[in-house]
Image (cartoon, rainbow, N blue to C red; front, side):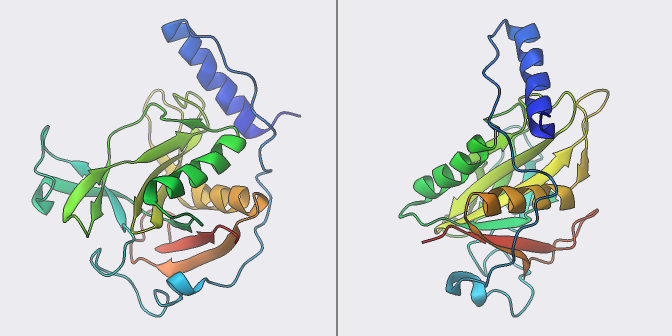
Length: 226
């Protein structure tokens, strides 16, 4: 039986073929089953100090607490007044790499192995980088299908100071109106995928004080095994 992700991806590629005349890619490998349960791992030292209290400001840690939408066509990225929070960061990843770019690549490789596509059709969103004192456009993105014609899981990622902040959610079908229908199921899908890939998963470990819809305000911490 084909997985949910395989069906979604096939539907998305069919849409690409209709609109652009592109050739569909081969079917992805079997994705991690949706009922896969991640085994809870101990928190790594790098984030253990962030679990005692709520993190309420984006200057406290490298973690981006929210993704943001710009309210102007050409915003001043240092001006917080020109950005509005849209969705909560709900996964924090610690890749075993030397640079931010390499860390993002490690994260994307796991998603590609699950059959996800990079750089899907999506809105532009930003996150606050405390070291630069400015908002930064999404640095790495992926989804189960390009357009999400039948719904999909979708992530945006940023890596600051070696820590990857991920916003993951489940989208509704693109028509008649695209909407986020679950943050919690998105978080669970990422935990299952990375656990199956051998990363250490600590569910709902970091309180980012960003509860919204079905999201409880906690980010799952996922660490690449040594």
